[in-house]
Image (cartoon, rainbow, N blue to C red; front, top):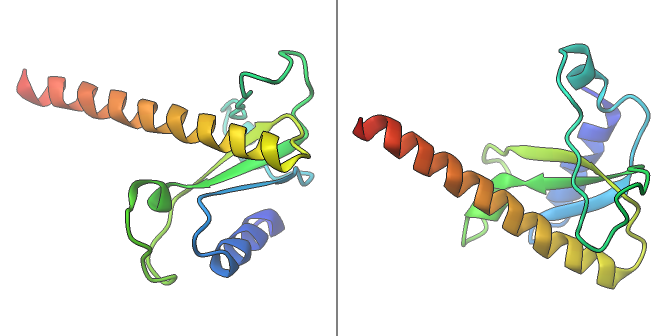
Length: 121
C-alpha cells in the first residue's frame, strides 16, 4: 500500500465528518494507475486556469458522499483520488469541494440511468 493511501485512511478516520481531503500530491501515488495503462484522473475547478499544473490531490470518500448518516469507521469505504491544481485558501477549497461533489454525483446518476436503460431493454 502506498503511504499516501495509508495517510488518507488515517486522516479520514480522524475527520469522520469530512467527505473531501485536499493535499499535495506524493511522488508515485498514481504510478499503479499509469502502469495499468489508465490515465491519471484530473479535476479542474471552474475557477482554475486550464493550464494550471495539477500538483495537488483531492481524495473523495464516496461512501460518505452518498450517505446521510455517518457510519462506523470500520465499515468498507471507497475513495476516489484526482489530481487537481493547488488550492491554498479555505474559500477555494470550499468552492472546489462543492463543484467536485456535484460533478461526482452527476456522473453517478448518469451511470445509474445508463444501467437502468440496459436493464429495461
